[in-house]
Image (cartoon, rainbow, N blue to C red; front, side):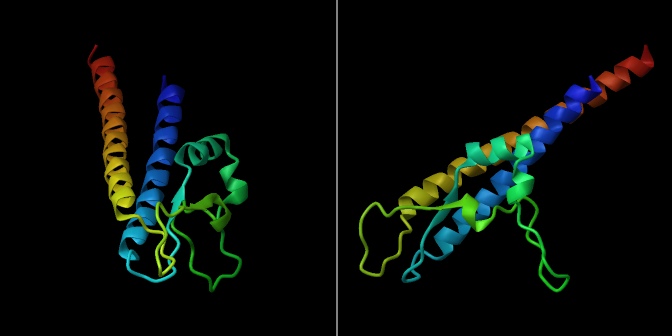
Length: 137
């Protein structure tokens, strides 16, 4: 049972980290909506989660090459793993941020982030309840 719980929590932790990274990308897009030439970025969440859960993400993960470099945030995707969003309509300033799409993606990702947190919390609570009932028997 402990291995199943650990595996489930590891998977959900990876999902939470990736959701957080995607939220950061979407927030950056929204913040740069008026920046001329800004190219909106996103990630293929399903692919990133598959890579993270299979261990393949370690090969593509960002890493510091010198001690003076700032470490990337946990779960950060390399530039090659990020995707540029295509503009729904052309803009004179070459900015590809579509605020409607970004707001919808941000809200969707927020809901899924919260759901992942609730799942982790529920799994831990269930495990604790099972340990308590086992000890009192």
